[in-house]
Image (tube, rainbow, N blue to C red):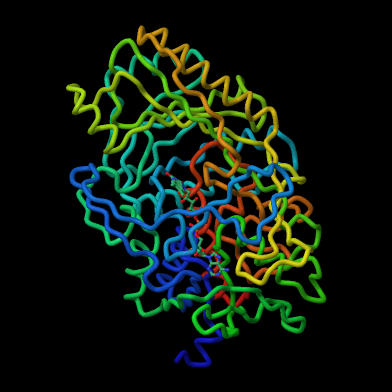
Length: 500
Ligand SMILES: Cc1cc2nc3c(=O)[nH]c(=O)nc-3n(C[C@H](O)[C@H](O)[C@H](O)COP(=O)(O)OP(=O)(O)OC[C@H]3O[C@@H](n4cnc5c(N)ncnc54)[C@H](O)[C@@H]3O)c2cc1C
């Protein structure tokens, strides 16, 4: 049992994906008692991953599923919604690519106008990237390029020789070519989870040893309770999904990290007389500005074999060559299956074809968002969610321009590229939803302040990619974790100082 004094001091963290896990860890390190509420069950993170010198030898993991129950899609009906209600969240499946946002990404948002301006800049995040990267054991390039800072790299990766010539050709198009940074990529590891870095296994489990973190599984949070008198959230209400009982937990502060869709839904459902449209939703922006990374798959046949490891990253084009907030980068396919094929083909590490995920951006729009579905729904855990998102035409333009430039540079280095496949995927396919509780100096454009706290409810922080003001074409988990670590550190300082 927790003593009443601990009840008063504790912070409730909701969700044990990478954003919630790093929050729990940072708070515990700063002597703040934490209860982590996780909707997944005790054994939900189970799996097995064996990697030897950076090659996956054995992998067993949960199945990743699309959520279909109780979701209506009011924008593009083909939008995909993938989630994993499990300890570690989507890190039960992720690939571990961890690029930083760059100064240019923040400048890109600035030039798009007031509504898109982040309340923080790269320099605010850099020390937190450093801290998080140390936990992620990153392998990657050692030198900065304008589109991608090198960061705190544990194992330096150099571009394969044949790609160095592509890098020279791409420079003329304002693009950089370098190895993409990955977490725990080059190490020999045996992990009791479906990936080499599951946030619950790597971050929360060690934090349990501090004695300041406890976890409740099967705890599906349903709402946060606002206290009119104290002017703060005083309780978190959750459903114990094993017993069906509703439970109430007193708290000093809350960190919401249920993922960009579920966090917004939870806050929208936390209504009170003071906040009839959802917690802190004074300007009607909560849930809006949902965005994703429009993504395409590209396969190119070649006249000669090219290296497939380390995975090459062809960055977005420089700001002077792109419209504000529209760009795309490409990530080369690698991994054990392709490496095995290259071995069988008699040229270890080199293939006569290469594949890419071409990952683009969409400018956040007020029209896209997560809403509560007003229509009566069957009573199930995901009832009442309306997802509204549509891909702007400019996104397809940025993807195809990137495809054409990749073919162009491969041609210029004499690789003889012939496009075998080009497929633009449905929205949601990149599993990078963000922006629903965005940071902004003004509550008119974002529900969170510069410390990821709700403007009107300072004892609630939103720690996941919902906080993104814009969505640069980089994989989001590292930046979500850096924002979460930064906000959690500030929360711990404010709790200690008695500001909350
Ligand atoms: C196949 C695949 C590959 C990917 N590769 C990459 C990559 O290389 N790099 C990258 O940056 N990203 C990648 N991603 C995306 C990345 O995994 C997510 O961006 C990241 O996990 C999001 O972290 P999160 O903490 O915000 O949310 P999640 O990981 O979704 O975690 C949310 C947590 O909240 C819990 N939860 C939800 N609702 C409630 C509730 N009501 N009450 C209590 N708990 C709740 C969930 O059970 C879960 O534990 C990939 C995803 C997939 C599926």
